[in-house]
Length: 175
Image 1 (cartoon, one colour):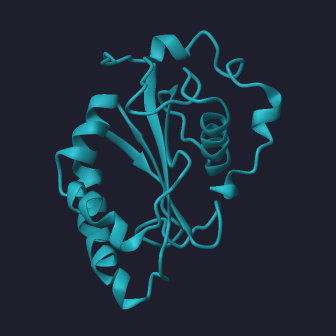
Image 2: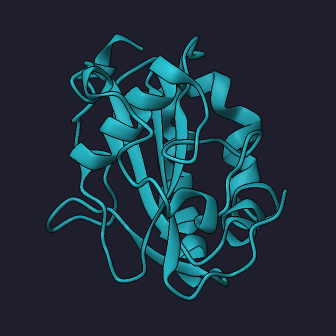
């Protein structure tokens, strides 16, 4: 399913990854060396809108809102296709090819996508809530994946109603 550009909506994404070793460990050095070029590629990619960075830093690897060994990537894109192209058709693919060298395999969802109003910057809390909803209830217009996408139009009728209140309180650190 493709999602046509929707002038009033952008696509937010959260990816969590559990480090196998600390960021300063030599076994993770190839990943750390790719951070700046991959982030620069994201910043310059067609359709890129915004990405989370730690204050005074070039990336968000120092932020650990999902657990001590878990790094997060939170970004906003104009379309699902723009994000897909960056993830699978750019230098980011090199990170994907070697991810098992640096990160544990997640048994639960580690990537979540959702539509936001254009101009809105999602918070980490909002992003973790969407991931918790995906883990608890599977893909929906509220929280979905590349494999089970929803359009902005599908998400618009029920911005929060798609998720039961108990899912909002889930602790996402369990994955």
